[in-house]
Length: 479
Image 1 (cartoon, rainbow, N blue to C red):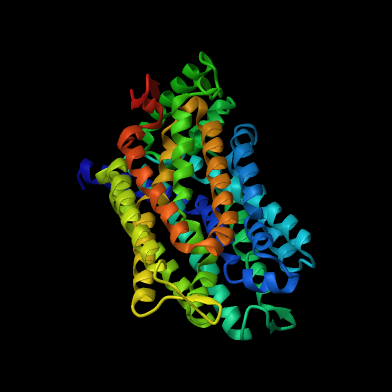
Image 2 (cartoon, one colour; image 1 turned 60 degrees about the vertical axis):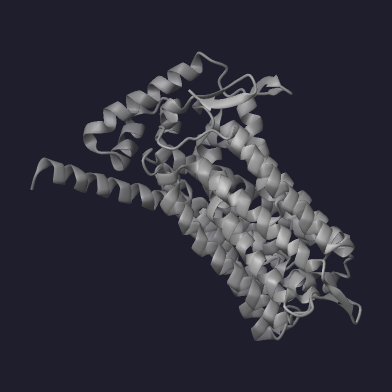
């Protein structure tokens, strides 16, 4: 066998091993997706059991997102102090506790508390997973591996909606009993399984070599590096990271402060990117789709089925990003996604403008229900293939090393806050006018297109050490 063939074989072996590490870390994304959508099938039953108004039910659904924002904000600091894998483990513990507490909640305030606890874990995992994956991945496949975060999120959404549907159909409704417990309570209790899996995987994952070197644990870093790169490149890779760390110590390490409203321009780019990802209204589809389709005339069983099919579509199209992000680049995919979302959301808004009131409830006449369904799913396709995974890819790699963990935490917190605002406002907005609601989301999709063209740097093919993204004047570029 030639040396070239041997080298290629070693490269494949190391890439395979790193891929397994990335998959394990991305299970945190599964928890993210599961928690995001498990409430979907339970919201009407919770509203009925606790006698909630539209605004109160919106807060009950969105309450976890407050915890997510806090978890995301502090995750980077905790990870820099304790390590990536240890923080992953504690995120799993928080979600485990939340799943049990939510399942046995006896009042609205009780449910909100447990949802907040789970949110802390989910927000933490949402930051640590992309940071860890970017730090252990070779630059040639970093975008692909970082996209596993979103793939795991979509799989979590699918698992939650599927389990919701199974329990609801088995019981004859989310409020009915299964083995002495209301179906909606079982929906939460299922979350124990992925939380245990994530906790076990977190214990077995090797720590990030960048974290180990930052703590002076050179021998440990060398051991980990030997698992993810060929032996003849271990020293070179370690030296590259160490040079980056030395450079950071000569700068304002960890400081995201700057001259643009108190922050560095690149941090603002990350924040706006994260906010726009939510302001297009994607999580309305996954939090409220079952309720939404019932509201416009579909039966409860059909609404569950539609929501599950939509989640399958979301999983499938994520593979488009995985297979193209390192070939086409981040920016072209985001431009295509923004364009598709704008057209799809505009058509959904037009479809809902045709709704009529039948027996006191809105209904879409003729073919307008099918049109709304088609374009709602095309919106999911446009988002899932681009903005869904690529926002996490960019947040994990676009910041300089010295501020990555902190800036990623701030960007993720902004994403969760935006998620909260969209989630809590939808019941009120939809009660007012669905056309206006989806028209607002379409406007933000259009704004996202202009923002990407003007402000998003291309990060394809750059190592984290050479990224050195900075801002000059009003533009952001890669040095």
